[in-house]
Length: 285
Length: 285
Image (cartoon, rainbow over all chains, first blue to last red; front, side, top):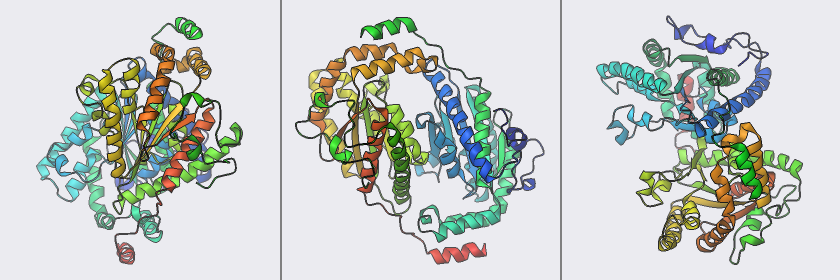
């Protein structure tokens, strides 16, 4: 979108993973491109929500009349507590629920394990006009699968290529792919997990396994670095979003979505019927 | 919920279809149980949105920790333009998208027609902790199917019983079923269709077939009356919501959802781990 008041640089540029990118050089507390504070961010998010909702309606409209095949796939990857749920609630919550398809990928079932790792992903792809949101994704199959050795190294190797081929095919069929890694610091994660333990209304969000995963954080960072090195492509870019400040992460992801939609040059579809004729029919009815 | 300022009667009572109910006695412009105006309704809707979001989070939490199988199925039926989409946007939009599953049932595909009419419905049922919203439903198979004679009379007859058996089984497995018919007048429908024809940004919502359906409205009203007569059961009640005033219909459906959730006596699930032990582990990590 046009850069609003508080954006001094386009976050799509700032956050995009490019050759030579190093995850360990990203400060999770930083707010690249944004000059405002938490308070200003609230206003920016509300402003963006209206823009996003309007663009989404055009995307949806074009698929319903005129057969525009285009759609968006937003992939959210992160360590626990990084704020995937908050993005869904506060960014996607502003959009007509009919135009959003949400899928959370947990530990694969027996049936899913019996198929190729992309099998369950393909079943959840958004249709034309829809914004699909993946809470975790096929990247778990090269992240936790690598860290916890759930597959042999040669299979993990194969998967990077399979993912690139898969995403190239999606992009070719009209899917704009936005891959986001929310990046939080160890300190911030500790605080957020502690809050879940201290508040009985948050206990359900906690799992002792979250701490097991936390202990493996250095290995996950390595696995993420490999993901960026191997699966950053022009048609399916990665964005690393500093996420210690929830308000920044939400604003940045909202901005990525708006940018993607604006790049589609959407417009209202042209009626495929004779408007005056239908007015006359309606008048007579 | 506790009756707020402007509700003088519980709409769940007022709108519920009971023995002897006659659709043609319902005034689509009326606002049963609600004393406020459009302006007051905005405040009531915002107030209800917070209550609804909180209850939904408890429903979701209970399914994630503790294995509570309960869920909600909201069935929305109506003539075109009655406001199903607005309900989804303005009522369900206030709820965490992760806890809502939306399904729109259009003209059945070849594959769907090759199966029993409930086959495609079963595939879209919400899982535990989820609020499922059906934009049209299995009731189309006794509404448009009857009016347009898409199935022989004896098959239509069979379907009422099949629906009752199906819904009884759902209710038995923890699904709270709320069936809503949004009821608009012919005059109001004409205005809303005309608006779609007059505004190029609304053309995509119009279909010449909408007028064909409109011409059959008296037959649809009969078919709806039969639906109420045959499929109103204690475990799957019907509510007829006057819908000429959009703000009333949204408020009423929000209220039905809140009532259903409150009747579940939800609470935050109890941790299935030792909280103090996990705090110590986290502290040391």
